[in-house]
Length: 82
Image (cartoon, rainbow, N blue to C red; front, side, top):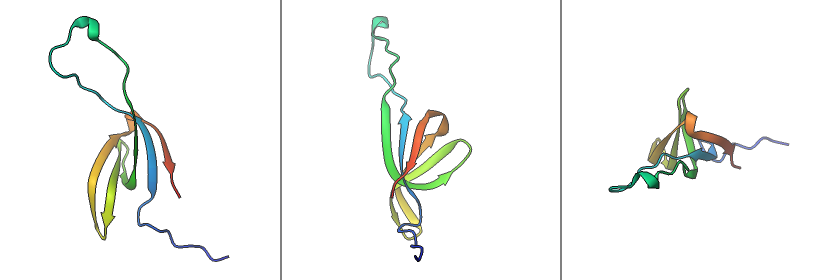
């Protein structure tokens, strides 16, 4: 069986991670909550460094758009999609 050429230049991944959150306006001390929002990002893995994963939603030739840099310390899982 012949091996297939990858469909994309970069792997398509699903990343589950914990996002940072900010409040809006004045808040009372009793309104302090420590629940951090879970997030899911799906995109092309452009680069992985010791500290971060760099994902793009769109690739075209040697360019990419809508990049996000997710710190590895916030990452829960990375799954390569087929």
